[in-house]
Length: 440
Image (cartoon, rainbow, N blue to C red; front, top):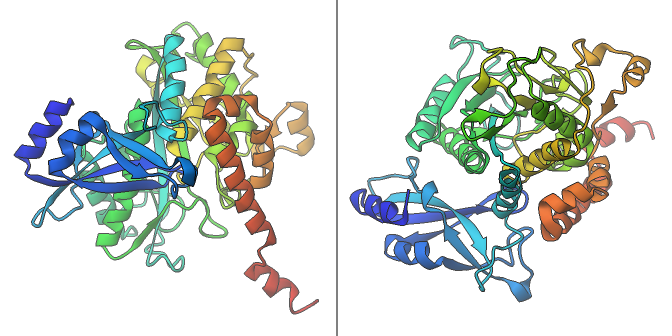
């Protein structure tokens, strides 16, 4: 889609307002609206805004920013009432007033790292599986249904919500592969069809907004909080990923017993070797580590396999031997991460594996959760960080993470996460009051 296409469609569809979207470093969607009269100017020159109040953006003395919309992301917003005024949206790249890319823009961070992959001859494709919960309100965790994995409409009260969400995503040009009830009560999943990583990061932000907008229309609340309820599975975002050279999957080798090329094996080895460092970006909240515990399908042990879903990396066997389907599934991320930064660090970890030809350990095809600690040690199976504090420590020491994010985002993110951890660490919870107040 070109600038001319955008202007033509805006005229044909009688668009009145255009929302310019971007995210802060935590992945929260931000936007401001312009009238259609300003659209041509915005496409050519960008629109100025104050970045001083955006998390991780500029200080007050360097706050002037330019949001330049990407024409390829122009879409009519189907959840806005068309009777009063047609509203469209575009994702923006953020620039300094002198025209240089703003180093605090998460979209720029991903684009910068995709360029590194491109220089190595690769394009990066991802397909995330985002899970979420529906609750009656945002005040508590009262569920809508008691359904379980793949349960049908007799137990699943949210089937209409999922259906309308899928239809709305498709209307916006976002391809959906599956939708179904997940394991926990009132938990659901809609999987996006794999595409190029930058487009998928944009799609992931759009997906989260659409899920919440549809839920709101039905008078309920949708949340991507990783672990909202004790004793049941949390919500993950398994990320299927592969590298292509042109239209050829660089992960595929028909002569290998796993159908994996050396590139795929080195890439997976990179994910495993750098897993602890990148966890702060794939699981970025205090609550994320309530999900990353053994026993609830969330992977905590750093290993890989084909069929084994207790490992961190899995090579799916739905279509063994089919070139386009060959991929690695990284299972620890959750859907509350910033997809631009999460995709960037996973890519760079894999590329490091390729550059340095990291050896891939043998696959672990038995349940890692059931192994004794001694056996895991004997097999050199390490664990992911068990808290946000540990994740911060690993990321802060990582040259790979600093190089991937750039100094600005790296320092702002570490600063933000330390504040979050300190607030959590000093908070007196209801559990402590209920447990200790009566006895101490």
